[in-house]
Length: 78
Image: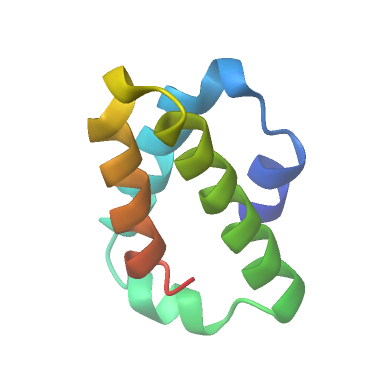
């Protein structure tokens, strides 16, 4: 799922994508799911979260969303 989200990333959907990633991180056994990611999935996850963070960091009015993306980077261990 992470790979598809990364491959199909669109700035227009950044807010919704951030919400989806937050919802996934709140799912039961999320940390266990992270352990089963292979290297390509980890890379896709890292790239996706970095793009989201950069997208929101570029706009001062979006600082809260940039902080949410930054927080997700540590939750997803990237």
